[in-house]
Image 1 (tube, helix red, strand yellow):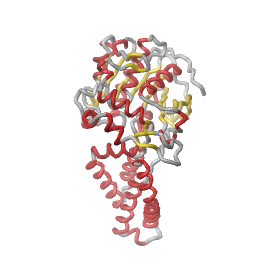
Image 2 (image 1 turned 180 degrees about the vertical axis):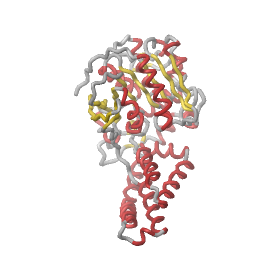
Image 3 (image 1 turned 90 degrees about the vertical axis):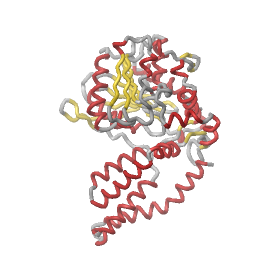
Image 4 (image 1 turned 60 degrees about the horizontal axis):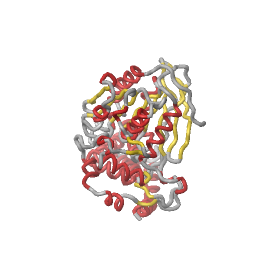
Length: 416
């Protein structure tokens, strides 16, 4: 019912969006004398902001067509190496002969598409052979494809790391820090030949009992029945995933924006002022950010509910109580995989100490293979995007990966 009401509201707003869109074009026409007046600029700017706020955003493109390597622009092509019902393994093929470390970037399945990590990928491309997990929108997955939960997530990662072969480094951004550590723990316990030589965990909820944030307290304070009854709904027709129970992306987005509603309102007001003043460059920067930020996808209900239970309520990973598909997740079995934990000083989603907890859990790992970075003046998204990511955090990650790279890389076994 909730999803159907959302669809109805979006449809009801369609005529208004069309009128607003056409009005702003008319008001910006150089042939319209009114467009050069202050009232004309203000109306055009207002219509622009309204259109941005009410639009439904689809999945964005990575758009990384070239990268600068050794002072030259090198062509980059995207290819899909393996498809699974709920995600695919994407490769950014650089047309270069460089033999750089192979890196699997694990994107969060937390509402946003993998393109949220565009800046992460772009920064790592010059010195790494980059792969990324590209998760599908549950709204587009038919019921016959089955369900997907946190244990399936772990299995997907083990499968893809196996396919990529030995000496593949792994980086988890935010939410996937938990399943990545679980996958590496299981692979280490099995002495798997594709166990990664290094694992970088960035702003992830390994142990949410450390410095709990508003997000953690919200999950902790409500019973599982509350989440099942209040945030789980079914995908309506005519979507391909009709009748699939999901946690809708629009609810996730509403929750994130509500946490910092004043900041979001201020940014939109600033964009309005930039448009009125003719500062198109500043307005475009804000527009591009929100085009990515508002592009959201639905999560399969079993995955969302199991994540709430295992990660935020019962804390099974740090307690050593997680049994995934019959395999106990034992971080103390990690002995070969070097671990780098990165946290942001101003992170209001994963508190300080939640990611660092991974270092304490890996009791079997030599201290020489453990590293930690607390990025000053950095919020949650600043850990993997923006100037501080590019200039301060990424160089530290690159040096860490190089230090633990084993040189020889196994052959890929993924299906084309």
